[in-house]
Length: 472
Length: 97
Image 1 (spheres, chains in turn cyan, blue):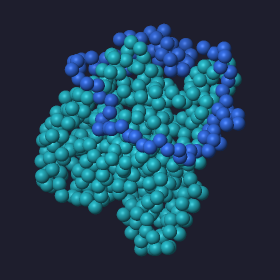
Image 2: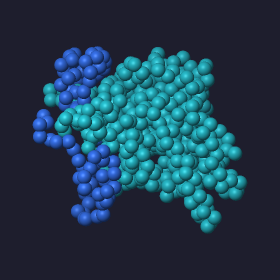
Image 3: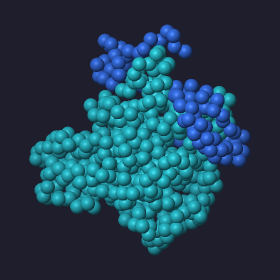
Image 4: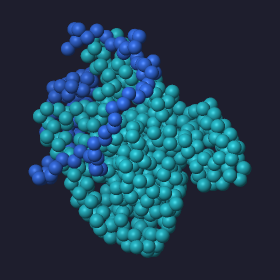
């Protein structure tokens, strides 16, 4: 039987020793999911299909082949397409929508021998920071079920945290992988924009969205990134940058590494127990020979404002396609075409999604475009310039992932702005297109996990992984 | 910048969304709180700054214009709430605004 804290290396060893077959491993995980239904991490569990996938890989292993990800049991956020399987985005709008093809990440994972065990809960269309905005109910934090798991990839984070999968895939537009990873005590990586193909990911904000992994060890994150990264002809924004051997180059030797601590991320807004946990980790890195310097990202206080203008604008455009014609939900008895559009959208979208479409429509509307949208695009450049300047002096940056630990269910749901501000340390990476990883680094007085964020240069995920590995 | 219920009604029309009178009131209030926060951006002078729309270097992606196999029509129509033969079916257009 698998242990709750099993990472992939442990499982891999058992498989190669012949101690367990993949189908028995998958059965174990299906049982784990059954034991944790109160967490509500999954929208759909592939009871039958997961075992079919497992049998196929067991058969492959019997022929002497050893697929690189054999035994990697993965949960996938429900905004990523799998052929002939539902892709709901946790929305009434797509409640019965079925994927027409496999997303590139799904294809790559399956080709490498991973088993997809199910689809995880999320904030509707990835809009939210708590996984409370779901058509299928809230997901609870396995570390304390009165608290949120974070969002929007809260189901993926909870699945890994509670041992319902070896690893999970999520998407991160402004912190949707890193913040839930921090809240549930697991690793979560948002790669550089363009590192991983977005083909088959339902779009929220196209110039921000990026797919990435959740796991229980840095090695597992490195391994998954190696498999899913790379240029894809089906995503013209995916980068033609060579993918390094992340696992092969994983090292704890960080002597001489220059790490920046941005003043703007260590303010009085930090909850009391967060700072000592982060400082403790920084001391460890110092002891291993890293040099720590203070740096400044002067436009930090404008990130949330710029982020919400730009992402809502992109969302209002991306979500215009849900018009009741092509994608599953349509309101009944409409008088005419316009009435059908309006009623399908008003009935099919939840409150937060509508709020963001409205905000996005407003900032793009005639008379406000320059004042809001163009202004925010200019501020986006200032924010990116801040990072370019700092990265000419240091190799990576360390910050808290979030100002506080997981908040209580319901605590912020009626105050949209307050909820938006919980992403204050994560949105900058998406504005600048740089990679970021959240690393578990301790607990607060209530036993809730604290996350440390490492930010790096574009396409330099290796430095993030090595720094995280040194802390492990 | 303050928006009124009338502005909210106009934006909703553009976005093809509708709200009840009660929802409009709550929404207008929330909207103004958010906009007031966003107005923070005006503290910055950005006169000489080029807008940034893409964070990584992108070049045009071109390929040969070749006929390739596409998804079968039945597949494509699988998710349509209403269809007829090889078409998406919609309510009558004449009479709409």
